[in-house]
Image (cartoon, rainbow, N blue to C red; front, top):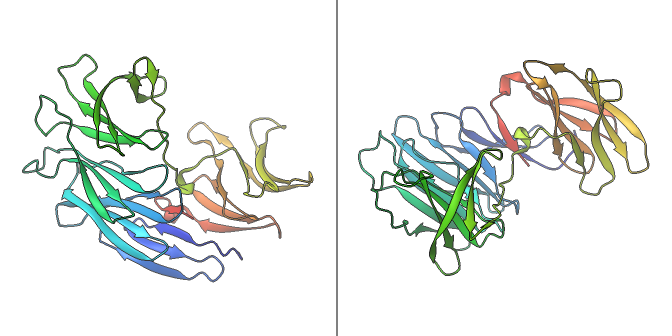
Length: 307
């Protein structure tokens, strides 16, 4: 495949690798010897890759940031193994929020807290702990408001009806505000309320390797990947249609009671190359030549990647 867009791949072993499809060249970016595959998250501006995991034989969880512009790695924070959550980038990609909750396997609580890594100053900022009448072993997590101006902080407090306390931390002022909150069972998430209004929450980017889309346009809106179900639920076709109405079949999917729909769209790598998954195998389709090639197969089923 002749795409010049590189893939950034987190292998099962925890190695971060840059992969060029045109040449097949693989460049090792980092290998910190993780106990299991780290979580991987890209920033929306395309510059940063955040990943964290438990290191082999050290009893530590580490949070790293890879700078795709400068091509270097930064250790952001570490705490005793386990107890950490998946970090989240702010909508403008400036900050990475880290939540470190106490785990029963920790010997003390000194590393518990909420932290912001500022990518402009390359400094870690400790967010003031909400003044609860509980010790620092409480569960704590933080996500972003949709406008990126606040952290939405959730802390366990079994003395309350909901079992949690809800806070907002204003980035510009450093002000901590107590909020109302509730758990929305239909949406399967906590909601933060200011008065009677729900504060819109920001949704992190999803890795292409984790996406299961049913429709996707390329960036120039000249090609549309979609499914044709005109012949019923099984089998069904993945089709790429041009803006001039020319349709080209790509692959045939099926439905199983175990897996559900086996064929899903990961996204457009560039204007002409479509990435999709059939069961546990990833493929790439060239809309200009009509050729399809394996990207990753079932031997790499635990792999994570983005571009």
